[in-house]
Image 1: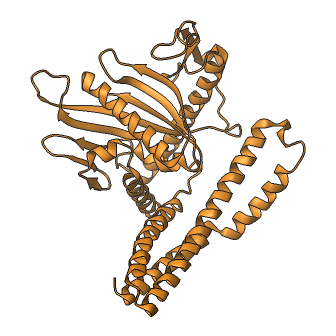
Image 2: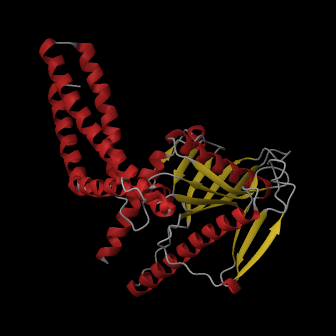
Image 3: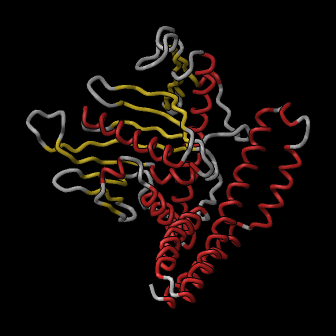
Length: 373
């Protein structure tokens, strides 16, 4: 890369990072951190554990974001100095190292820029994900398990904790459904673009005639609720069933009636939890998940009302949104953003950041278009 091109790119990155810093409002973030640090130092903080967890969690998020911006600013300054010294001394290896580092900084700043697009009411929350097999029989159940693994691998690669609440295994292979939470700052805002119907086309490993099979799975993503969320459910609207856990588990997990299934009668929403040994724990967790799903229903209804008032007849984000083709060629393509890749193995191994970033940018574009309508 010529010196002038390098300078142009670093100046453009500097301008982008400055814009990001302004959008994030670093002085406001530092002021909020100072206020939270005062609360953390209070001796009675942990008298209310739920409040204490919110305070410490928010403080951790703010510190992480400030460190991320500060580190990028420092790296950008350092790479400019490195390139300048390399040019002065005609040091080709150092120049190559500077160009490699600049490529890494470009990707990091692009990812941070996407983060600034997550400004929705619940975007900063943890994500509660549900995977359900659809049409396609055993292939669909297998596909659902492949998608679950894809999201768990994505979380693992980023160092995000995962809590699996329920897994319903299919008879021959795969899963009928699964529900799990990904605990990370802005997990909901990031992963919400995955909601919708996913389609797999491949030669079925379960067909002894080797025929091509199309199968479907549905992904649902809702924000994890907090105590401040107002979601009241009258007891008479809930049907409670207890049963014995199934699938892999410890001795007391699948030998006692500890699993709990809650059915919200008015909407038909069903939530099952079987990850804890205690029926009471599973019921409490199931209630949290049910409230999260009802909150999502409420938001969807409000959005539908606004769309009707605007005369919006466009399909929702929950429509069929991604195809995974393994035969006769290899390709994963997002049908909304047109982003695609031929490296299907990497995608199923959790490398979906490019799809997530494209989806977030697409969604912001849709929101802006709707705001102008």
